[in-house]
Image (cartoon, rainbow, N blue to C red; front, side, top):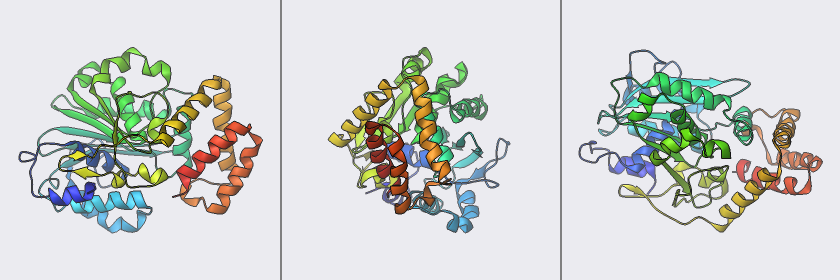
Length: 345
């Protein structure tokens, strides 16, 4: 079963009857992908129930195109009619997309009185993907800075048992936010979960702020993980079973569950090989070369007037690959492999 099956199976179980599970953790981490603008309050004292928010969002169904985001929308609509989730309170919603970053976050008060902060992963905007690639040479990027500002503002003195999590880039932002949170806020956080998100640069991975929180970090990746293998992360990540192919392994709705847990698996040879290739390429490049590399890559998208991955058609894929010929052969091959994996769904 997947997470939607889990929601349906446990719809009438309260958090007292079935305490918070790792599957619940994944479910709440995904809600920040949805656009709750003008529905969920942004840093005001008032809150809205999950049921009310889902009902107000229902008429925006046409806006949610694409397999993953439409599944997230569907998941919320199922959650609103369950005893387990419908009374969850949503608040502190933020969404920012500008020329420098793509950021989203939401705070939730669960029926068991615990608090969950969810950071959104990369959407389909090229700006979002460019920011991800900037993580290969820059810390903090704009969304990582904003994550720290957000968490310091979102957690109150009365909050306790705070969990922070995110899928894809959201997992990275969860770690960065807590690393740079105020001391009293870090003390309230009991768990940080990175669901197949990229890691950190070596200096940050070895830094004191990371060392202070690393015991609270859990990381989950699918068998064919790509995104989660970028940069430096905990070596103790949990590999789980996913039914998807290529980048669809990254889609959390393809992750398999049983009872209260995500089903364990072993990492594929392909995932390990790609991880080594990327690490090797990054280690070979100086800081200046990394900056030039990312600029050259995203200039290709800009020169082709591509602002969103949803705009990329098969014909354009081949045009982009042709443009990669300006780069060295090894980089061409790596980029071509990544492009096909990421954008052909």
